[in-house]
Amino acid sequence: MAAFLTLALCIRGSLASGKAPRTLLIGTTGGTGARAVRGLLDAGLPPSVLTAVSRSPDSSASCKSLTQLGINVAQADLDDQASLNELISRGWDAVYVHGLAGDTKQIDTREVHRGEALAASFTNAVRNGAQAPVVMYNSAAGPEDTGIPRIRQKHRVEAALADSPGVRAFVALRAHLFMEELWKEYTRPGIVGGKRVYAFCVPSDKQLCLTSVYDMGRVAACCALDAPAFASGQATVLDVVSCVRTPAQMAEDFSNAQGGPPVRHKQAWALYLASKVLLPELHDIIRFYRQTNFSTSFGAPEALTARFAKLDSLKSMESFSQFLQNTRWAEVERTFATLGSDVGMLAGVSEPLATTASE
Image (cartoon, rainbow, N blue to C red; front, top):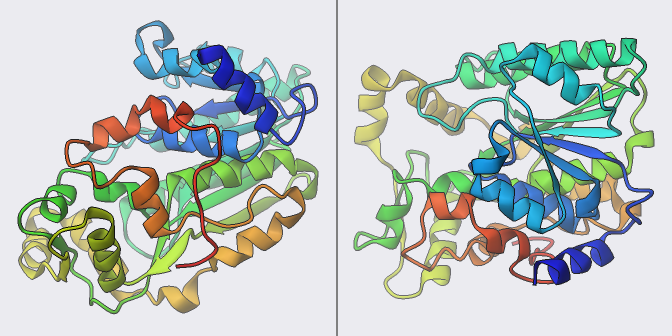
């Protein structure tokens, strides 16, 4: 069965494995990594040219799933410079950095250090004769003056990678509100449970830019496949917007996906006010979403599909309703943990996930 799925994925690839760019994947073996990998595959990168990085590949269930599909897994430690140097010295056509920090409530301050260490490894590799790759980094949308530490850290990593002489071209994939965040324990239970409430302290008619991890993987693959289009030595910022929805529209989408009693949106004022003292970073993030005019500040989903139109692998983005369908939101027993380790997300179907041009 695994061999059949691997063959199907290879056939689906728009390029033969011998011509497709050898692509290193960093930070895709945990959290929502399966969704990113699925996007990379669906956009045309054969599994044989992909290499995922893991600190402990032999003991990781997700790594075993990847190897069953024909994806290579390399052992490396992002906190060990020698280990990182050896990995990067192998030479890569493209590198997709999905994450340099754990998905934790407390900010991981080593994210910037890891980005700087990775940049140093690229420089070291090129000085020793390796080719310089195009590097795509999962960053965060937002201006420099948001005051949000996580966004500030992401932009510091951008600067480190973009300035490395060992990077041929750098592409910052700036994500917005990740749809996958709605699967976490502080949001999903209230929506699928008895209350049927989507609690988010922004006005019901506020337009929000949403990003799916699946689309991050697809856009990263398009960058790797279209690497010559990115000028050498230049940094490019791509605004990754999968769709634009209001909380009221999202509540309607939840209702349609789940069936039964309707879901309603509610501004969680108590949480917003309490977070100012108890969870200041969360308060700043909510304030950012409340005050930012997303309809004028950021790009539209059509901008990315137009940019990569010649590849024929990104005709449309994943809408919010399609996201709920593709992740099987209506199955109450599923959790964020199952979403991140879902083998079916990688190999459950023989066709790319459903997407639509607009809601």
